[in-house]
Image (cartoon, rainbow over all chains, first blue to last red; front, top):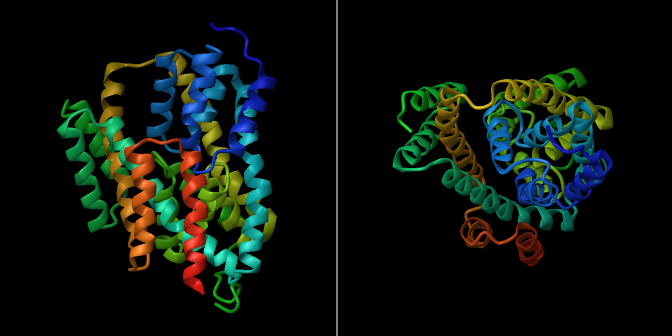
Length: 176
Length: 184
């Protein structure tokens, strides 16, 4: 099928990536693409895009695309080599900082960090949302569906699974 | 504000595992929407403000941001074993599901009908993320300075597509510095 995957370097690569992955899985998306597709030719461009799309619309957090790629590359060992590294920063740095944040909720530096970073976070997520919007929508009909979704979600808290089902139907019916 | 433990609901490890399983398994295209819905709206374990605080920290720390929130919420209610329970719920199912998807993908590749359905759903997914951000933004203070940083972060990454690490490296210290000065 493809050249043999070097699990050890895959593991180390992802470990390094997750330590700089400030902002979450979408941050390192371009790096993962470069490593797997351009440098090591472990995946084709098309395979990479399809695996990413599949993970995006399946239930599960964004990071699932990494797990799915791991499985596709090397089965269970690939899942381990790509998934264990993402736990490392979360279980060390995050526990430590979360602990300090909870222990000293009113420490001035903590308050400054949080009130300073919250707007930056909102701006970054807004950027991700618009990039995603431009990636998935090819013409005005896609944008229309996206905007209707925003309106419905802001007006009432209906279960979004219904919206997704409606989106799937619209797609199958050839609307987008 | 004096004692964080006083207002916390009693949350068991099993509840953490189940809630984060539910968040994870219902997360279509990004977990922030579902995490907020479960933790703030349904369970009322956190207020909007607390959720934003944790999300901002989760975003600042390296790694998947909602996974970082998972770790911190688990830790807050039940210490590190609570974190482990929450993470097991949050990551365990996606691992199994990813394997199942991987098998299906290798078997069936890309059928035209499936591709069309995926296309329609992805437009909805973008709308869900956008709506979440709008809801989160309503919790921001009504002062101009925070909104300047919303604008700068959005423009740098969303419009100019500058590398995220640079943008965070420039904006984060500046934003914290401004907030620090405002507190005095």
